[in-house]
Image (cartoon, rainbow, N blue to C red):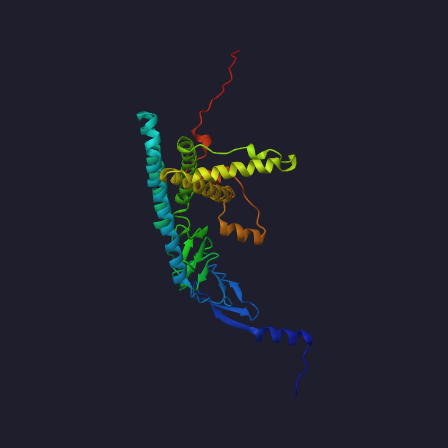
Length: 343
């Protein structure tokens, strides 16, 4: 004989039968969860599990690697051309002024070249940052809260800290990953982020110096402009400015054809340095703004999606560049003591 049950009892029985048992990847403990919970956090180790997150098969790893190698080769070739081509084009002009001027600019060129190549090498060929190894998988070895907010990387098959991100171009997890830069063929992370910022600063300084010196040297070897305003007679005032401008542009282009090989190299160095400097300044400003906020590019995207509050502070920049103490620590302090009146 079937017994009647209340709606509350039927609902309770349904909830129990919908529960299922799963295992935490972090500590190996068994957890009883409702069927609707695809993402859960272990109450012991703190590891986060997402069972419905699929592993994407990446078939373009070789193409990304080839792309990075091509960009890296182009950047290295361009830097070497700017250095040696600039020295070849500027050498006669700077030493024709005076020996002291030539030696002075040679020292500046050597310092900027060594700094740019050194910081570029550190950013490109140094590991971007490997997350620390941590024990996981079994309950006795994993203590309470040892894997707090850790997730499991399905590509590396190991725990991934909240500060780490898997780069599919590099094929590994990167600690404090900012972005993957194809021009250095490497990720920008905790280990080479400072070198990347120093490379941007030295590259901006170098391109600024090259643009100024190329413009200054071109003024010495530029052939005279040949133009004539006699053909402007009878031109209406409406088109006079346009005719003058077109005449000057034609004279300028005609003089370019008369330039020597050194002059053409100087023109190329000026145009390429100015255009490259604009992009480098924008990238450097963006990087420094993220550092000022205490974030990286990827963490800024995630915090914007989660509407997290920004903690802007100049001390973030100070700590990023390796200063352990605030700048006010090194400033002199003056202790003002009051006079004591003895009665």
